[in-house]
Image (tube, rainbow, N blue to C red; front, side):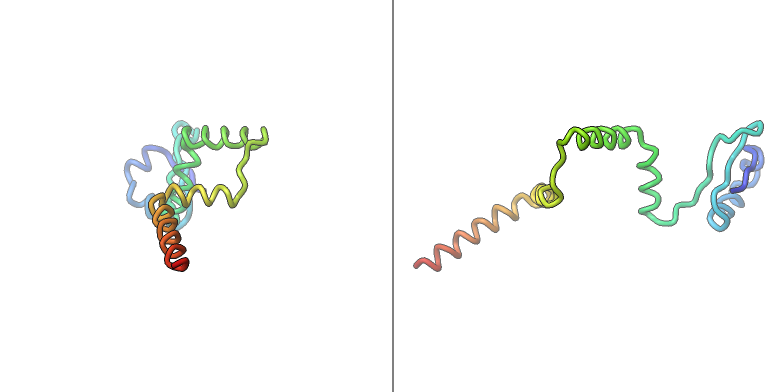
Length: 109
């Protein structure tokens, strides 16, 4: 990790953007103390992880979830994904149930 002053970054911002992409993070300092980090994400997933890891709202959700799990209020893996699927496609489940009923009725005729 390379440390540079705010003044250097202001004067050569483009160069430091290229440098952080090729050489890794650049620590930006003011009066010898780190104040920021210039970091090039590897891809969209990396960017999302970086943003979420520094989001107070997301961290609060994670903390609440951990507390709930420690209290024994968790949901089983299969139950969770079934609920996610149902929320994502509520109509498809109803349509499937209707289709199954029609097929059953036809078989009974």
